[in-house]
Image (cartoon, rainbow, N blue to C red; front, side, top):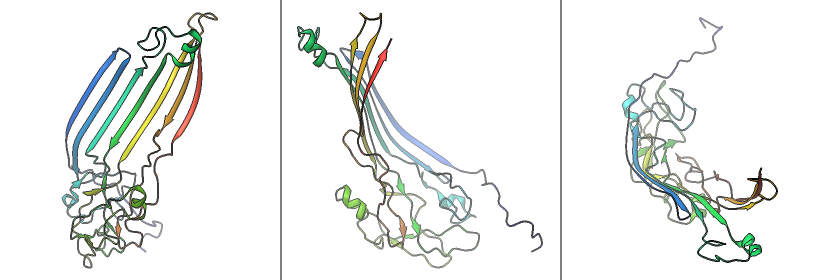
Amino acid sequence: MAHPQFAGFAGDEPPIANSIYHALQVRVEKRFANGLEFLATYTFSKSIDDASLTSMNSEYLGSFASLQDPNNPGGERSLSTFDIPQVLQFSYTYELPIGRGKSIGGNLNPILNGIVGGWRTNGIWRFNSGRPINPGLYVSDSLPTYGPQRPNLIGTPHRNRGNDSSWVNQYFTSVDGSDFFAQPAQYALGTAPRDLGAVRQPGANNADLSMFKEFGMGKIRDGMRLEFRLEAFNAFNHPQFGNPDTTFGDPNFGKIYSQINNPRQLQLALKLYF
């Protein structure tokens, strides 16, 4: 070696990229009145670029985000890796109309009112579609200095239409991917895009809910009160699965091995204000 003191060399990624984003955004809001306030938002969008990532794995060559053809960065143009076309979110706070002075039980006994009256509830709901899949090859035979090959796209991928537990065993209708992917020739560029939206990773369906009630303690100290809360995270215990194996030729192609959200969590809390 001419310079044995250097084990290798590296450089920064070229600061070049191209992207475009279009969206329809809808917002509906009700300010607090008659015990209710809520906010609902909906986004319908599409993002396209030639350089997006979902992690810090941003090496120019030899990684997930590498250029298949470093002489043609525009060939990486596809859906953005983070593209989520539909997102619906809904949040609210509601005072239940039960208890003294309310439309239900307006003359409740003070003791009974202390148990069933004065409750409030709130929640945050989110529903969104998944990100695109990222086709890869189990065996890649690319030109030196080129990034790993992608498979050839020969059909349209389809997701298994079974229940969630079926997704874990086989996310795609084709067990090995041969219905829509094929191995490219040695040194050839695969025709599959960097990110493919014909079928997407599992989306999210989550609700965080709570109920709470305050007990006035002004007789002890002015403004003093006790708040009791019951909170449920992922209240309906809906699983959100991780990404399927999208590496064509891998024996585990199409399988999902992880759940990326937590099971339902419940907690009780007491908060004293004084």
